[in-house]
Image 1 (spheres, rainbow, N blue to C red):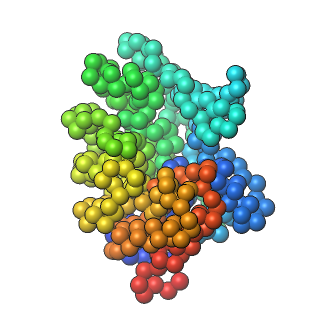
Image 2: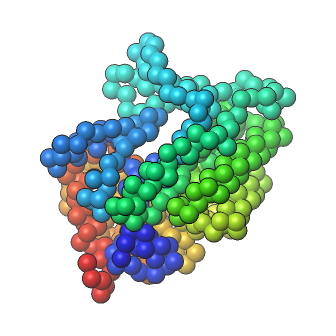
Image 3: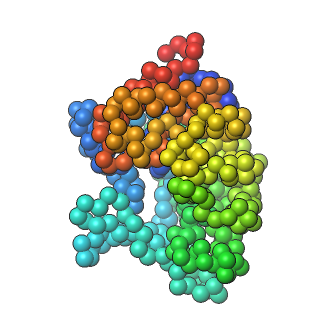
Length: 387
């Protein structure tokens, strides 16, 4: 069974030969550059670690590494528009840059682990001026320059499932807050809802154009479309049910319906946080795959219940091991025990792709990463499978 067949079998809620494994096909399933460097040293690899995502300081996982660890997925990487290039600047002990949307991101040069947002380009833009903001062009030809060549190079070696995720922007709720700043965005939800709706509609229309352009030209290579948003934090939702159902849900229904009806692609939604109460709405939006299952968030740790309640409608992509506590701070045996438990809860009947609950953090010991992988190889084999 090829990697792509393994993924598609799991997504159809059937049992493949083994539990599919994702590492890095979407940013939140990847690994920090520090953890990657430590792991390469631990396994005596001569590979030089490279940064794949500057803002999050996540590693670019090499093809050799992905094949060595039997990863079944790959990221379908789309470029920024051609008028933008990374221009790193330094000031006052910080390195900083502005992305293609004008969002400013800053990293402390002394022990900084990732860039944080310090400039929100729409925070002081009047509503009447929003149409004149320099919105990035979703149709810029540079976005797909060289992409097919990269995909073909991978296809010649392996047959993975390709995931297109957050190549243009993150999701509607999260990205609206990043563009305006959390204080203004969440205040406007109540005090200036017309502005919020204009912004959400603008982002939706840009996304529709982006996906149509990419899928018309490259859709044959892409298996899964991922939208990355955040609807909750550790203990509750970011906004009320009423606001979610009025402002966010209908726009995702339109976006996902377009992608599924026109191109037949599977829809993966990434959302951290305590989103259990929203899962029925998420299913109604057209989502077929949910990532990451943040085990430490409220009501998200009972993976057996999640499978029982929603396993007929959703594939769980993640939830394999907790990256907040278990993976960085437990013993290898404790890591193995958690991986075993999550596989027992989520794997039966298919509908499960193994991944950690978020990107593997800088302080994670390489011994624990290897313990996670070994446990997946040991317990992730389906009955009767020939390996």
